Length: 481
Image (tube, rainbow, N blue to C red):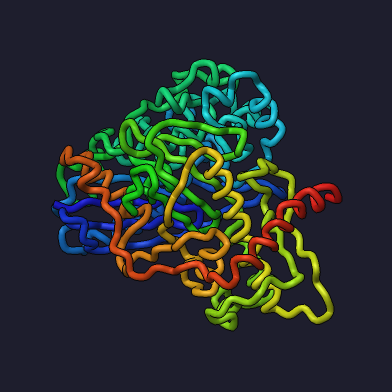
Protein backbone atom coordinates (compact mmCIF):
# COMPACT_ATOMS: atom_id res chain seq x y z
CA UNK A 1 0.00 0.00 0.00
CA UNK A 2 1.06 3.62 -0.52
CA UNK A 3 -0.09 6.95 0.85
CA UNK A 4 -0.11 10.49 -0.52
CA UNK A 5 0.60 13.59 1.53
CA UNK A 6 -0.31 16.96 0.00
CA UNK A 7 1.24 20.11 1.47
CA UNK A 8 -0.69 23.09 0.12
CA UNK A 9 1.70 25.97 0.83
CA UNK A 10 1.45 29.69 0.23
CA UNK A 11 3.81 29.68 -2.74
CA UNK A 12 3.41 26.12 -3.98
CA UNK A 13 2.06 22.61 -3.55
CA UNK A 14 4.18 19.60 -2.67
CA UNK A 15 2.91 16.04 -3.04
CA UNK A 16 4.76 13.17 -1.35
CA UNK A 17 4.10 9.50 -2.05
CA UNK A 18 5.18 7.11 0.72
CA UNK A 19 5.32 3.36 1.09
CA UNK A 20 3.42 1.46 3.79
CA UNK A 21 6.39 1.83 6.17
CA UNK A 22 6.63 5.57 5.56
CA UNK A 23 9.58 5.39 3.19
CA UNK A 24 9.38 8.13 0.54
CA UNK A 25 8.73 6.78 -2.95
CA UNK A 26 8.45 9.97 -4.98
CA UNK A 27 7.55 13.65 -4.70
CA UNK A 28 6.46 16.44 -7.02
CA UNK A 29 6.09 20.20 -6.67
CA UNK A 30 4.16 22.87 -8.49
CA UNK A 31 4.23 26.62 -7.81
CA UNK A 32 1.76 29.48 -8.12
CA UNK A 33 1.54 33.18 -7.39
CA UNK A 34 0.12 35.32 -4.58
CA UNK A 35 -1.71 38.50 -5.60
CA UNK A 36 -1.43 41.75 -3.62
CA UNK A 37 -4.15 44.03 -5.06
CA UNK A 38 -3.54 46.61 -2.33
CA UNK A 39 -1.01 47.16 0.43
CA UNK A 40 -1.67 44.63 3.20
CA UNK A 41 -3.83 42.43 0.96
CA UNK A 42 -2.89 38.88 0.02
CA UNK A 43 -5.06 36.67 -2.22
CA UNK A 44 -4.89 33.48 -4.26
CA UNK A 45 -7.07 31.80 -6.87
CA UNK A 46 -8.08 28.32 -5.60
CA UNK A 47 -8.12 27.14 -9.22
CA UNK A 48 -4.33 27.41 -9.10
CA UNK A 49 -4.25 24.88 -6.25
CA UNK A 50 -6.28 22.38 -8.28
CA UNK A 51 -4.03 22.86 -11.32
CA UNK A 52 -0.97 22.35 -9.10
CA UNK A 53 -2.45 19.20 -7.57
CA UNK A 54 -3.33 17.71 -10.95
CA UNK A 55 0.13 18.56 -12.30
CA UNK A 56 1.82 16.91 -9.33
CA UNK A 57 -0.37 13.81 -9.62
CA UNK A 58 0.36 13.52 -13.34
CA UNK A 59 4.04 13.36 -12.43
CA UNK A 60 3.60 10.90 -9.57
CA UNK A 61 1.49 8.44 -11.54
CA UNK A 62 4.69 7.07 -13.07
CA UNK A 63 6.16 6.35 -9.63
CA UNK A 64 6.39 2.78 -8.31
CA UNK A 65 3.60 2.06 -5.85
CA UNK A 66 1.15 4.62 -7.22
CA UNK A 67 -1.42 1.99 -8.20
CA UNK A 68 -1.46 0.78 -4.59
CA UNK A 69 -2.55 4.18 -3.24
CA UNK A 70 -4.90 3.72 -0.26
CA UNK A 71 -4.95 7.01 1.63
CA UNK A 72 -4.57 10.77 1.06
CA UNK A 73 -4.04 13.53 3.60
CA UNK A 74 -4.01 17.27 2.93
CA UNK A 75 -2.13 19.88 4.93
CA UNK A 76 -2.92 23.49 4.11
CA UNK A 77 -1.93 27.04 4.97
CA UNK A 78 -4.37 28.09 7.66
CA UNK A 79 -6.98 30.83 8.05
CA UNK A 80 -7.72 31.41 4.35
CA UNK A 81 -11.32 32.13 3.36
CA UNK A 82 -12.63 30.27 0.30
CA UNK A 83 -16.20 31.50 -0.18
CA UNK A 84 -18.47 29.20 -2.21
CA UNK A 85 -21.96 29.69 -3.60
CA UNK A 86 -24.71 27.06 -3.62
CA UNK A 87 -23.14 25.31 -6.63
CA UNK A 88 -19.67 25.26 -4.99
CA UNK A 89 -18.39 27.95 -7.35
CA UNK A 90 -15.63 30.09 -5.84
CA UNK A 91 -17.11 33.58 -5.35
CA UNK A 92 -13.88 35.57 -5.06
CA UNK A 93 -10.14 34.87 -4.62
CA UNK A 94 -9.18 33.30 -1.30
CA UNK A 95 -8.09 35.89 1.28
CA UNK A 96 -4.92 34.44 2.82
CA UNK A 97 -3.46 34.13 6.31
CA UNK A 98 -1.08 37.07 5.86
CA UNK A 99 -3.79 39.49 4.72
CA UNK A 100 -4.38 42.32 7.19
CA UNK A 101 -7.31 44.20 5.61
CA UNK A 102 -9.75 43.07 8.32
CA UNK A 103 -7.88 44.52 11.30
CA UNK A 104 -10.82 46.74 12.26
CA UNK A 105 -13.24 43.80 12.24
CA UNK A 106 -10.76 41.64 14.14
CA UNK A 107 -10.35 44.26 16.85
CA UNK A 108 -14.13 44.53 17.26
CA UNK A 109 -14.50 40.74 17.56
CA UNK A 110 -11.61 40.53 19.98
CA UNK A 111 -13.17 43.18 22.20
CA UNK A 112 -16.41 41.19 22.54
CA UNK A 113 -16.72 39.82 26.09
CA UNK A 114 -16.24 36.06 26.20
CA UNK A 115 -14.99 35.67 22.63
CA UNK A 116 -11.39 34.90 23.58
CA UNK A 117 -12.53 32.49 26.26
CA UNK A 118 -14.46 30.41 23.73
CA UNK A 119 -11.88 30.37 20.94
CA UNK A 120 -8.85 30.26 23.24
CA UNK A 121 -7.19 32.85 21.02
CA UNK A 122 -6.97 36.49 20.16
CA UNK A 123 -9.06 37.31 17.08
CA UNK A 124 -6.17 38.10 14.74
CA UNK A 125 -6.76 39.98 11.45
CA UNK A 126 -5.33 36.99 9.57
CA UNK A 127 -7.94 34.61 11.01
CA UNK A 128 -11.00 33.68 8.97
CA UNK A 129 -13.96 35.25 10.79
CA UNK A 130 -12.79 38.88 10.46
CA UNK A 131 -12.34 38.37 6.72
CA UNK A 132 -16.00 37.46 6.33
CA UNK A 133 -17.08 40.50 8.32
CA UNK A 134 -14.93 42.61 6.00
CA UNK A 135 -16.70 41.01 3.04
CA UNK A 136 -20.10 41.75 4.58
CA UNK A 137 -19.20 45.45 4.75
CA UNK A 138 -17.13 45.93 1.60
CA UNK A 139 -18.42 43.20 -0.74
CA UNK A 140 -22.07 42.70 0.27
CA UNK A 141 -22.96 41.13 -3.07
CA UNK A 142 -20.33 38.44 -2.60
CA UNK A 143 -21.28 37.95 1.03
CA UNK A 144 -24.95 37.41 0.19
CA UNK A 145 -24.06 34.52 -2.15
CA UNK A 146 -22.07 32.52 0.41
CA UNK A 147 -23.36 28.99 0.97
CA UNK A 148 -20.14 27.56 2.44
CA UNK A 149 -16.81 28.88 3.68
CA UNK A 150 -13.88 26.49 3.46
CA UNK A 151 -10.25 26.71 4.51
CA UNK A 152 -7.67 25.94 1.80
CA UNK A 153 -7.10 22.33 2.93
CA UNK A 154 -10.86 21.77 3.16
CA UNK A 155 -11.25 23.10 -0.38
CA UNK A 156 -8.86 20.41 -1.61
CA UNK A 157 -10.84 17.88 0.47
CA UNK A 158 -13.95 19.02 -1.43
CA UNK A 159 -12.20 18.50 -4.75
CA UNK A 160 -10.95 15.06 -3.68
CA UNK A 161 -14.05 13.70 -1.95
CA UNK A 162 -16.96 15.87 -3.10
CA UNK A 163 -17.80 16.70 0.53
CA UNK A 164 -17.51 19.87 2.63
CA UNK A 165 -15.35 18.52 5.45
CA UNK A 166 -12.60 20.00 7.62
CA UNK A 167 -10.47 18.92 10.54
CA UNK A 168 -10.19 20.33 14.07
CA UNK A 169 -6.63 21.71 13.86
CA UNK A 170 -7.38 23.89 10.84
CA UNK A 171 -10.82 24.94 12.06
CA UNK A 172 -9.39 26.13 15.39
CA UNK A 173 -7.82 29.04 13.50
CA UNK A 174 -11.07 30.49 12.19
CA UNK A 175 -12.35 32.37 15.29
CA UNK A 176 -15.65 30.50 14.85
CA UNK A 177 -14.45 27.49 16.83
CA UNK A 178 -14.69 26.37 20.45
CA UNK A 179 -11.16 24.97 20.71
CA UNK A 180 -11.68 23.26 24.05
CA UNK A 181 -14.90 21.56 22.95
CA UNK A 182 -13.52 20.81 19.43
CA UNK A 183 -16.71 22.06 17.76
CA UNK A 184 -18.14 25.10 16.03
CA UNK A 185 -19.34 27.75 18.46
CA UNK A 186 -22.84 29.08 17.78
CA UNK A 187 -21.94 32.18 19.78
CA UNK A 188 -18.85 32.96 17.70
CA UNK A 189 -20.62 32.14 14.45
CA UNK A 190 -23.40 34.56 15.36
CA UNK A 191 -20.83 37.26 16.20
CA UNK A 192 -19.26 36.71 12.80
CA UNK A 193 -22.52 36.86 10.91
CA UNK A 194 -22.33 33.18 9.92
CA UNK A 195 -24.23 29.95 10.63
CA UNK A 196 -23.45 26.27 11.14
CA UNK A 197 -25.05 25.56 7.77
CA UNK A 198 -22.25 27.54 6.13
CA UNK A 199 -19.54 25.54 7.89
CA UNK A 200 -18.02 22.23 6.75
CA UNK A 201 -18.58 18.96 8.60
CA UNK A 202 -15.92 18.39 11.27
CA UNK A 203 -13.72 15.32 11.70
CA UNK A 204 -10.43 14.64 13.47
CA UNK A 205 -7.41 15.07 11.25
CA UNK A 206 -6.48 11.38 11.26
CA UNK A 207 -10.09 10.17 10.79
CA UNK A 208 -11.53 9.06 7.48
CA UNK A 209 -13.37 12.06 6.06
CA UNK A 210 -14.45 10.47 2.81
CA UNK A 211 -13.40 8.53 -0.27
CA UNK A 212 -11.66 9.72 -3.43
CA UNK A 213 -14.31 10.63 -6.00
CA UNK A 214 -14.94 7.89 -8.56
CA UNK A 215 -14.10 10.21 -11.47
CA UNK A 216 -10.72 11.10 -9.96
CA UNK A 217 -9.96 7.50 -9.01
CA UNK A 218 -10.56 6.45 -12.60
CA UNK A 219 -8.57 9.37 -14.01
CA UNK A 220 -5.66 8.77 -11.63
CA UNK A 221 -5.62 5.01 -12.08
CA UNK A 222 -6.28 4.03 -8.46
CA UNK A 223 -8.99 2.18 -6.55
CA UNK A 224 -10.77 2.88 -3.26
CA UNK A 225 -8.74 5.63 -1.56
CA UNK A 226 -9.48 7.06 1.90
CA UNK A 227 -9.39 10.83 2.35
CA UNK A 228 -8.25 11.92 5.83
CA UNK A 229 -9.57 14.94 7.66
CA UNK A 230 -6.16 16.52 7.11
CA UNK A 231 -4.61 19.34 9.10
CA UNK A 232 -3.45 22.90 9.23
CA UNK A 233 0.14 23.12 8.05
CA UNK A 234 1.72 23.42 11.48
CA UNK A 235 -0.27 20.55 12.98
CA UNK A 236 0.76 18.46 9.97
CA UNK A 237 4.39 19.45 10.49
CA UNK A 238 4.05 18.35 14.12
CA UNK A 239 2.64 15.02 12.91
CA UNK A 240 5.55 14.67 10.50
CA UNK A 241 8.15 15.42 13.15
CA UNK A 242 6.53 13.35 15.89
CA UNK A 243 5.72 16.35 18.10
CA UNK A 244 2.73 15.01 20.03
CA UNK A 245 3.62 15.10 23.72
CA UNK A 246 4.35 17.68 26.42
CA UNK A 247 7.97 18.81 26.27
CA UNK A 248 8.29 18.29 22.52
CA UNK A 249 8.45 21.16 20.07
CA UNK A 250 9.90 22.56 16.87
CA UNK A 251 10.96 25.86 15.38
CA UNK A 252 10.16 26.39 11.72
CA UNK A 253 12.17 28.89 9.71
CA UNK A 254 9.84 29.38 6.78
CA UNK A 255 8.02 32.28 5.15
CA UNK A 256 6.54 32.85 8.58
CA UNK A 257 8.35 31.76 11.73
CA UNK A 258 6.73 29.27 14.07
CA UNK A 259 7.76 28.05 17.49
CA UNK A 260 5.42 25.19 18.40
CA UNK A 261 5.08 23.17 21.60
CA UNK A 262 2.86 20.12 22.06
CA UNK A 263 0.80 20.29 25.22
CA UNK A 264 -0.55 17.62 27.52
CA UNK A 265 -3.95 19.33 27.70
CA UNK A 266 -5.87 22.42 26.72
CA UNK A 267 -4.53 25.51 28.52
CA UNK A 268 -5.15 28.63 26.40
CA UNK A 269 -3.51 31.95 27.17
CA UNK A 270 -4.83 34.41 24.57
CA UNK A 271 -3.45 37.49 26.32
CA UNK A 272 0.05 36.33 25.38
CA UNK A 273 -0.87 36.23 21.65
CA UNK A 274 0.11 32.55 21.71
CA UNK A 275 -2.06 30.41 19.43
CA UNK A 276 -3.82 27.50 21.16
CA UNK A 277 -5.14 25.01 18.59
CA UNK A 278 -6.36 21.43 18.37
CA UNK A 279 -3.82 18.91 17.16
CA UNK A 280 -4.50 16.57 14.23
CA UNK A 281 -5.17 13.65 16.60
CA UNK A 282 -8.04 13.37 19.12
CA UNK A 283 -7.84 14.85 22.62
CA UNK A 284 -4.55 16.61 21.86
CA UNK A 285 -3.68 20.29 21.54
CA UNK A 286 -0.63 22.41 20.80
CA UNK A 287 0.43 26.01 21.29
CA UNK A 288 2.63 28.14 19.10
CA UNK A 289 4.01 31.61 18.71
CA UNK A 290 3.96 33.00 15.18
CA UNK A 291 5.93 35.78 13.52
CA UNK A 292 4.76 36.85 10.09
CA UNK A 293 8.10 37.62 8.38
CA UNK A 294 10.79 35.02 9.06
CA UNK A 295 12.69 33.95 5.94
CA UNK A 296 10.57 36.58 4.23
CA UNK A 297 12.77 39.17 5.97
CA UNK A 298 15.92 37.66 4.47
CA UNK A 299 14.18 37.29 1.10
CA UNK A 300 13.28 40.98 1.22
CA UNK A 301 16.89 41.99 1.89
CA UNK A 302 18.07 39.71 -0.91
CA UNK A 303 15.55 41.24 -3.30
CA UNK A 304 16.48 44.86 -2.65
CA UNK A 305 20.22 44.10 -2.80
CA UNK A 306 19.92 42.12 -6.01
CA UNK A 307 21.24 38.89 -4.52
CA UNK A 308 19.98 35.52 -3.34
CA UNK A 309 19.46 34.66 0.36
CA UNK A 310 22.27 32.09 0.26
CA UNK A 311 24.64 34.76 -1.11
CA UNK A 312 23.80 36.97 1.84
CA UNK A 313 24.43 34.35 4.51
CA UNK A 314 27.43 32.54 2.99
CA UNK A 315 30.02 35.26 3.85
CA UNK A 316 29.00 35.09 7.53
CA UNK A 317 30.44 31.59 7.87
CA UNK A 318 29.71 29.81 11.17
CA UNK A 319 31.49 32.01 13.71
CA UNK A 320 29.06 34.25 15.63
CA UNK A 321 29.92 37.92 15.74
CA UNK A 322 29.00 40.12 18.69
CA UNK A 323 25.78 42.08 18.08
CA UNK A 324 26.52 45.29 16.20
CA UNK A 325 24.81 48.64 16.53
CA UNK A 326 22.60 47.83 13.51
CA UNK A 327 19.18 46.57 14.61
CA UNK A 328 16.38 45.15 12.48
CA UNK A 329 12.74 44.97 13.56
CA UNK A 330 11.19 42.13 11.50
CA UNK A 331 7.68 43.52 11.17
CA UNK A 332 7.46 43.76 7.38
CA UNK A 333 3.83 42.58 7.34
CA UNK A 334 2.78 43.38 10.91
CA UNK A 335 3.20 40.91 13.74
CA UNK A 336 1.28 38.30 15.71
CA UNK A 337 3.11 37.00 18.76
CA UNK A 338 3.48 38.85 21.06
CA UNK A 339 2.16 42.17 19.70
CA UNK A 340 -1.00 41.34 17.69
CA UNK A 341 -0.33 44.41 15.55
CA UNK A 342 -1.34 44.39 11.89
CA UNK A 343 -0.18 47.97 11.33
CA UNK A 344 3.38 47.88 12.68
CA UNK A 345 6.09 47.83 10.02
CA UNK A 346 9.77 46.94 10.16
CA UNK A 347 12.77 49.19 10.60
CA UNK A 348 16.54 49.34 10.54
CA UNK A 349 18.22 51.45 13.21
CA UNK A 350 21.87 52.17 13.91
CA UNK A 351 22.87 52.35 10.25
CA UNK A 352 26.04 54.32 9.55
CA UNK A 353 28.23 55.19 6.60
CA UNK A 354 30.40 52.22 7.55
CA UNK A 355 27.50 49.72 7.60
CA UNK A 356 28.09 46.86 5.17
CA UNK A 357 25.81 44.36 3.51
CA UNK A 358 27.07 41.72 5.94
CA UNK A 359 26.11 43.99 8.85
CA UNK A 360 22.59 44.30 7.47
CA UNK A 361 22.37 40.53 6.98
CA UNK A 362 23.48 39.86 10.56
CA UNK A 363 20.96 42.42 11.81
CA UNK A 364 18.13 40.72 9.87
CA UNK A 365 19.02 37.26 11.16
CA UNK A 366 19.35 38.59 14.71
CA UNK A 367 16.07 40.52 14.55
CA UNK A 368 14.18 37.46 13.33
CA UNK A 369 15.83 35.33 16.03
CA UNK A 370 14.75 37.85 18.66
CA UNK A 371 11.22 37.72 17.25
CA UNK A 372 11.24 33.95 17.71
CA UNK A 373 12.50 34.39 21.26
CA UNK A 374 9.49 36.62 21.88
CA UNK A 375 7.39 33.58 20.97
CA UNK A 376 9.42 31.32 23.26
CA UNK A 377 9.00 33.69 26.19
CA UNK A 378 5.26 33.84 25.54
CA UNK A 379 5.07 30.03 25.45
CA UNK A 380 7.04 29.79 28.69
CA UNK A 381 4.49 32.07 30.35
CA UNK A 382 1.81 29.42 29.61
CA UNK A 383 3.85 26.66 31.25
CA UNK A 384 5.47 25.18 28.14
CA UNK A 385 9.04 24.09 28.83
CA UNK A 386 10.67 22.45 25.81
CA UNK A 387 14.13 21.14 26.65
CA UNK A 388 15.18 21.29 22.99
CA UNK A 389 13.61 21.98 19.61
CA UNK A 390 13.63 20.36 16.21
CA UNK A 391 14.69 22.92 13.60
CA UNK A 392 12.97 22.68 10.22
CA UNK A 393 12.30 24.91 7.23
CA UNK A 394 14.37 26.60 4.55
CA UNK A 395 16.22 28.87 6.98
CA UNK A 396 18.04 25.88 8.45
CA UNK A 397 20.34 25.97 5.43
CA UNK A 398 22.34 28.75 7.14
CA UNK A 399 24.74 27.38 9.77
CA UNK A 400 25.33 30.89 11.10
CA UNK A 401 21.62 31.41 11.64
CA UNK A 402 21.25 28.06 13.41
CA UNK A 403 24.07 28.81 15.85
CA UNK A 404 22.68 32.31 16.42
CA UNK A 405 19.15 31.04 17.02
CA UNK A 406 20.27 28.27 19.39
CA UNK A 407 22.14 30.88 21.42
CA UNK A 408 19.31 33.42 21.42
CA UNK A 409 16.79 30.76 22.53
CA UNK A 410 19.34 29.08 24.81
CA UNK A 411 18.11 25.71 23.59
CA UNK A 412 19.78 22.94 21.60
CA UNK A 413 18.43 22.68 18.06
CA UNK A 414 18.10 19.17 16.63
CA UNK A 415 18.49 18.91 12.87
CA UNK A 416 16.75 15.87 11.38
CA UNK A 417 18.82 13.59 9.22
CA UNK A 418 18.40 14.06 5.50
CA UNK A 419 15.07 12.64 4.45
CA UNK A 420 11.38 13.38 4.67
CA UNK A 421 9.72 15.06 7.62
CA UNK A 422 7.36 17.97 8.10
CA UNK A 423 3.94 18.81 6.68
CA UNK A 424 3.92 16.58 3.57
CA UNK A 425 5.01 13.53 5.56
CA UNK A 426 2.56 14.44 8.34
CA UNK A 427 -0.26 14.61 5.79
CA UNK A 428 0.72 11.22 4.35
CA UNK A 429 0.71 9.80 7.87
CA UNK A 430 -2.80 11.13 8.40
CA UNK A 431 -3.87 9.46 5.15
CA UNK A 432 -2.35 6.20 6.33
CA UNK A 433 -4.14 6.27 9.68
CA UNK A 434 -7.44 7.15 7.98
CA UNK A 435 -7.06 4.16 5.68
CA UNK A 436 -5.79 1.59 8.18
CA UNK A 437 -7.03 2.70 11.60
CA UNK A 438 -3.52 2.39 13.06
CA UNK A 439 -2.55 4.23 16.24
CA UNK A 440 -1.21 7.77 15.74
CA UNK A 441 1.46 7.27 18.40
CA UNK A 442 2.85 4.31 16.47
CA UNK A 443 2.93 6.16 13.15
CA UNK A 444 3.85 9.73 14.15
CA UNK A 445 7.39 9.15 15.33
CA UNK A 446 10.23 11.68 15.46
CA UNK A 447 12.90 11.71 12.74
CA UNK A 448 16.43 10.60 13.53
CA UNK A 449 18.66 13.47 14.60
CA UNK A 450 21.48 14.19 12.20
CA UNK A 451 23.15 16.93 14.26
CA UNK A 452 22.60 18.98 17.40
CA UNK A 453 23.41 22.70 17.31
CA UNK A 454 24.27 23.82 20.84
CA UNK A 455 24.11 27.42 22.13
CA UNK A 456 27.41 29.30 21.90
CA UNK A 457 28.09 29.86 25.59
CA UNK A 458 30.45 32.79 25.14
CA UNK A 459 27.86 34.79 23.21
CA UNK A 460 24.86 34.30 25.50
CA UNK A 461 25.43 37.36 27.67
CA UNK A 462 25.90 39.75 24.75
CA UNK A 463 22.84 38.44 22.92
CA UNK A 464 20.71 38.57 26.06
CA UNK A 465 21.69 42.23 26.47
CA UNK A 466 20.83 42.94 22.84
CA UNK A 467 17.49 41.15 23.24
CA UNK A 468 16.69 43.33 26.26
CA UNK A 469 17.09 46.37 24.01
CA UNK A 470 15.05 44.77 21.22
CA UNK A 471 11.78 44.73 23.17
CA UNK A 472 11.50 48.49 23.85
CA UNK A 473 12.41 49.24 20.23
CA UNK A 474 8.94 48.04 19.16
CA UNK A 475 7.26 50.80 21.15
CA UNK A 476 9.71 53.39 19.85
CA UNK A 477 9.09 52.53 16.22
CA UNK A 478 5.33 52.23 16.83
CA UNK A 479 5.24 55.77 18.22
CA UNK A 480 6.60 57.31 14.99
CA UNK A 481 4.69 55.25 12.41
